Image 1 (cartoon, one colour):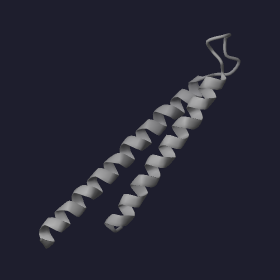
Image 2 (tube, one colour):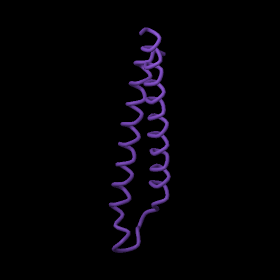
Image 3 (cartoon, one colour):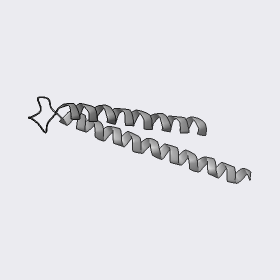
Image 4 (cartoon, one colour):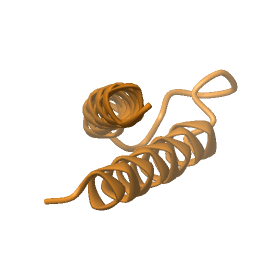
Length: 78
């Protein structure tokens, strides 16, 4: 895999993780737990939010590593 492909995959992973976290946050917010007891289990959306956070963190590491690799390649070429 080339470095540009790695960078793109990292960015896509971040976007997917953020979209998933937003979806789960909306589901939790729609439960309206503060006004009355929720009728649905909120554990599953919370687990998905944690998973989404892990996806964003891992994808950010891919982007950071790719950036470091590109920097090293530019230093070698210079």
